[in-house]
Image (cartoon, rainbow over all chains, first blue to last red; front, side, top):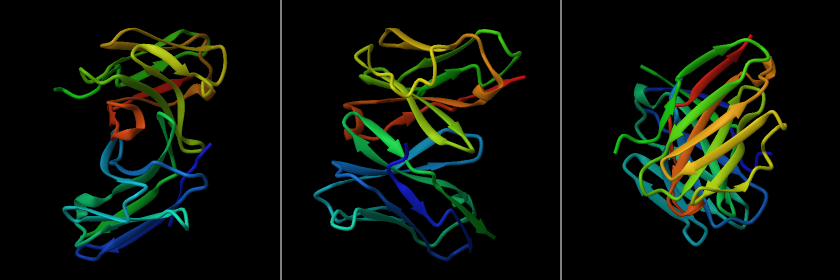
Length: 109
Length: 114
């Protein structure tokens, strides 16, 4: 079963634009994580935000977390063609992560 | 570290045959996870180990699936007998301290059962 639900399912933007993806979840969490998956590859960990944090930055990535709304967003600024990938949010359930269905991002050059 | 290593990268087998997927986690990581990815069902957790002990196998679809972790540096996922609906990409991931930190995923094994 999937805890996180990403929105939108797919997103197509021009290089240089910002991309925003959202994630909603159902139960309480200790942390929420975002991953990227390039076509035919494994998932790569991008960023982890803990339940007591509201915002976190890593390079061109900005993640926010609103535990009252049970939602998170991932913002990629100044997107590049190399950012084309699927992006997944994952929430922790005890020791394990439960992944959402993902957002497919296409950045056109 | 070379990361999480999975083998084989691709496997094509006939229905009814036994399939064994292999995984070498990152040295020092105490958790190992097996996931399956399909278009229809997304990423599903099959089973995970902590310190080589299976903790939760509730995601294993049927008795045809089994997993072992004989030591800290090796795990296998076996399907016997295989069926066409088992076709998917199988990922192994390892982590330190479970879900408290990020997972490191392998490149996956693409399994096709014909």
